Structure formats: C-alpha cells, structure tokens
Length: 347
Image (cartoon, rainbow, N blue to C red; front, side, top):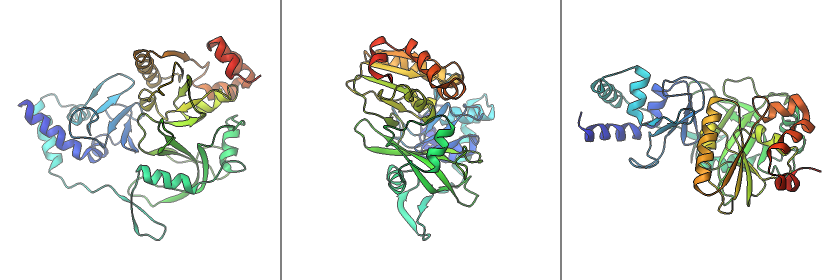
C-alpha cells in the first residue's frame, strides 16, 4: 500500500480514536483525554495510553499510543494489526476500512440532575473543575477514614483532596448511573490551574475502595500534570498513586510531592523551571520500571539530578502499612541526599 494511503487511514482512524479503542482495546477504559490499557494486544492494565484528542498528524496526534512498560509506540493501524493478529498490511487496511464504514455514536454529554444535557462535555477540564468545586474538605469525612485505613493520618498540605458524598459512577455505557461517596483530587498544571480531576469511589463506611470493577477514574487534561502536595521549587518527589505519594509525606511533610496517577503519566510530567533535583517514588512493577527509566532520562536531559527511591514492598503505602512510619523514615533517610533529609524530614 502506498505510504500516503496508510497515512490517510491512520488520520481517519484518529478522528474516531475513542470508538477504535472501545472496539479493539475493550479491556481498557477512558481516562480524560486518553485510553488506558495494558498493552497493544488488549490485555488488562494501565501502562499503555492512546491519545483520544489531538491534531491529525505530527506530535501528539489523536490515535498515537505509547506503552511505558516496553517503550513501544505506534498508531491505530498497529492496534488493529496486533489485536487481530494480522500479518499482511492489506488485511489491516481492509479491516480499517470496514471499521470506518460503520456508524459510531458521538461521545456522550454530561447530564444535569434535572436530566437536561449540559453544554460541558463529560471528561472535559470544565467538568472536572465543576466536580471539584462541588466537593467538600476531607476532614471528618469518609475520605479521611479511608486514608486513615491506609495509615495516612497526617493531612497537612492536602488541599488538592476533597470528598464528594454523592459522586456519579457508571460501570459502562449500558449501565445506569450510580451514586457513591468518593475521594476527589484536583489535577493541576505548573501554574496551579486545574486541568482535571481524579476520583476514588469509596465503600459506604470508608473502610476501603468501593466494590466496583474500576474504583479509580480520572478525567480532564492529565498528561504532564498531576495532583500536587506543596509548591515545588528546587526539589520535588513524584510517584504514581495518591496513596503511594502521601505515604512518604507522613515522614517528609515539608517535601513537595506530585501524584501523576499512572505509570504512563508519571513518565510525561512537566518539570518546574526552578527544579534541580527530582526524587522518583518507584512502584515495583514492569510499568513502574519503564516509567522510572523514561523519567530519569528526561530529567537528565534537562540537567536535573534524578534519584530513584525504592520501597521494600510493592509501593510506599505497602511499606507504611506493614512496617510503620519509623521504619519508612529510616529507609527514606538512607536514600535521600543528606541536605534534603535535614530540610524535609520530620524531627
């Protein structure tokens, strides 16, 4: 097939990126402007992300994907080839044309409590700001109970977290909307502007996450941004999950930290202009390893000293719960630069 024909097919698929992902990468789910899935073979997970919104070509084009666990990347033609096990590109092109000939529904709009369609699209930064504004501080709520159950009891500097007692949850497009309590986190850019929101739906008594298939979801513009705890200047610690980041803050309460919300987003965080040293809070899994390596390389290219902080268990919240704050503090002190241990460590 001529190169220009393949490029045109990729562009046309990119215009239907979400529909392509829902059809061929059905093990994944939408998170803001991206589709998250385990890999290009449609295995469950979160290490591969597909851009759902972007220009038709070039950097950041809709339909482009990257697997942070393997470093692989490609377009939606590659997705069709891999998920169906096709070898001959003529078969890939034929399948792509067949798919493009099908009718595809428009992305849904959000609905107001009265049932009227809102002008704010579901998953947009505007919708995320509206949701966060409707939530309340976490003190004395189920969100505080949930975090306490994860051994996170010091909540200083956590204004990015709120609690929503009646947060909408919809298992899939065919299911009715449910109302559940949720921990809500604001995703912000380097200037502090909110670009998205992350939700963790909770059990009715706050004893853990809700018993649903996907108790965590994000929406809005996420890539490069994150949930911020403290204002970064020359030093910043970054990790994937909110609980994994809040755990070291129990013993490093003055160190600015950022939760990127996934391995893919961790590898793509934007650096503050004043940043000189970056601590990467690692998770012990293949996706975390790939994100760490990519982030360390990027930081070095900006002249930023990057240091990995490694947990004993699967992540730092596992360490905190199983070994306690004193043991976690001692382990982190051994991995920090001495001047940062003196500056940021409690006591």
